[in-house]
Length: 127
Picture 1 (cartoon, rainbow, N blue to C red):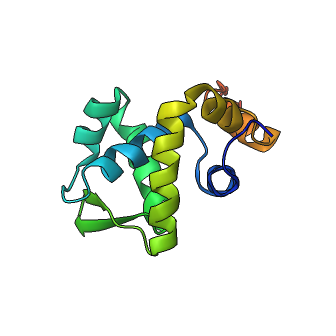
Picture 2 (tube, helix red, strand yellow; picture 1 turned 45 degrees about the vertical axis):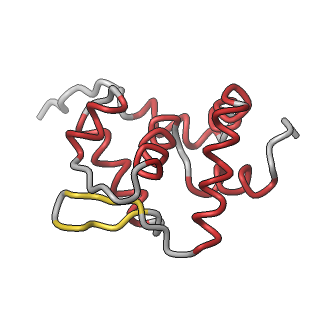
């Protein structure tokens, strides 16, 4: 399927819900010694800070980042295998960007539904 390494495909299915989340992870991976605030990450990946806060929290919960101090995140995978996979993911994303984005976009419909729900306009219930 799509020529991506198996471990990269598995990682994307298990850990990455959006291209934005992938960009956030790879930004921190490329500067592992640095701590980043959500505002700095948002500026670097051209995204909204509140969205980046959610992405950082997800990556933190998945054991890919650590919080150096409150609100300051650093790439710190919990295992060497995770680090090796993220390294291969970075290389794969540089070489096969369209295939990676296509895989992320083809994830189960629940993700699409959750994304669209975030933009649903709801009316106040009349009392």
